[in-house]
Length: 124
Image 1 (cartoon, rainbow, N blue to C red):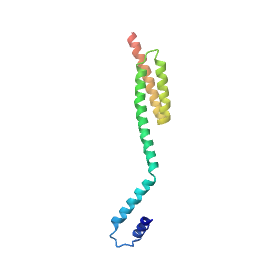
Image 2: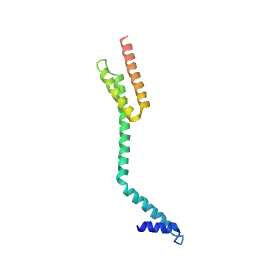
Image 3: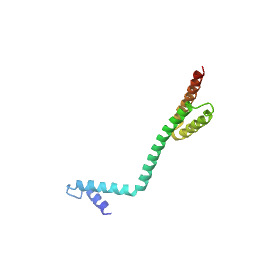
Image 4: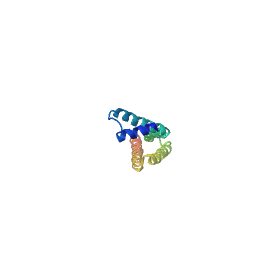
């Protein structure tokens, strides 16, 4: 309460003009107090942002591994690997949007076709 009264007095000009530093310190104290008041919300937002960042990294790295495993899968293993990639595409579509999921679907098609072409060239 005292801080607010002092700030109002300074803003009204009830001082000799030499208290600009005091006014800056009061504003800083008010900001710190506001941050302290919202600390839990700020911490939750930071945790959510960090979690989202880690999830993004995990999904990006995981989908690369899944695409590589699909590319190198044998005939018996291919349906299982394809189902894993399809699940990752659906999940990434929810997380990153339809455009990203479409790019992954295209990458999945390329991986499946390159594997088929590789097997055909080996047999020939």
